[in-house]
Amino acid sequence: MNMYVEALGYLGAVCLLVCNVPQILKIYRRKSVGDISLLMIVMLHLGAISMCLYVVLTTQALPLIITYSITSIISLAMLMLYFKYR
Image 1 (cartoon, rainbow, N blue to C red):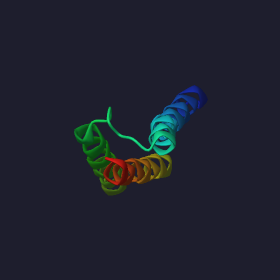
Image 2: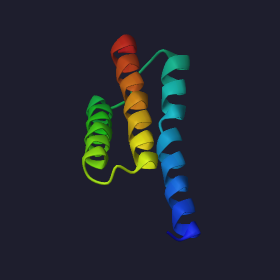
Image 3: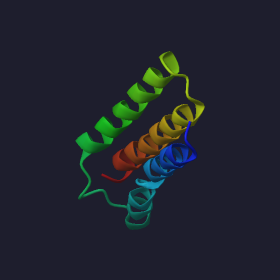
Image 4: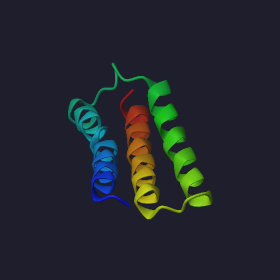
């Protein structure tokens, strides 16, 4: 595969992995989830799990499996914080 295409894929994976970390830190620091949508968190979590299973069952591309697995863990952490601080 083209090196630039691979780099683009890894860049997307990194962005997906870190996009919710600032929100988790904000929830943790403020001890509040007043402006956070529960539906968004649940949909993010279900989407990450679904995509991880899809990749495992079809392409078995390790970078994608790792990305979606970590994304589901991050969204689960956000879900736990939501119920802790609501």
